[in-house]
Length: 201
Image (cartoon, rainbow, N blue to C red; front, side, top):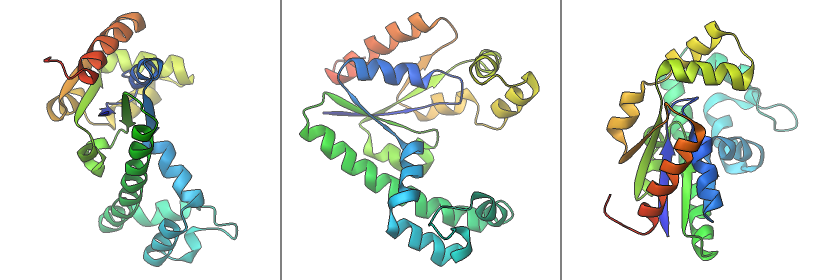
C-alpha cells in the first residue's frame, strides 16, 4: 500500500486531490479533524495537556477551553512548542493505526492530509509527499468564494501561511493548481496512479 502525504496552503486545492484519491479507492486521514477527535476522546492526551497547562484548560465535561489555552500558548513560545509536541505525538500515533487499518482493508493507498504535515513528523510516515500549490492571488479568490469572507481577511489568511515555494521545496512532488478544477483532477489522477503503481515519474 502506498502512503502519501498531501499538504499545501489554504485555497490551493488539497480537497480536490483527496477526493480524486477517494474515487480511486484510497483512504484519507484528515489530521486536523483527527486532532479535534483526539481532544474529545483521548484521555491520555487530555491528561498530558492538563499536566502541562493546568486543569482549567478543560471544562467540567472535559471540553477544551480554547481561549484559555490560547492565552497561555500565544504569549509563550516554549508553551506553544510543548503543546505541539504533545498533540503531534498523539496525532501521529493515531495516524499510524489508521494506516495499518487501511492496509488490512486492502486499500491501494492512504493519504495523510495536514497543513503541518512536515513540521509535525507525520510526513515521516509517508513514502512520498505532494505539495498542492497555487498563486496567492488565485488562493485569495478561492477562499473568498468558498467562505464568503472579505478580500482583506482572505489576504491576511494567505499571508499568515508559508509561501507555496516552501511546500514545493520540501515535498517530493508538486501539483500546481492555477487553472480549473478539471485540470487539477486530471493531473492528480495521473500522478496518483503513477505513485500507486510505483512508476517512474
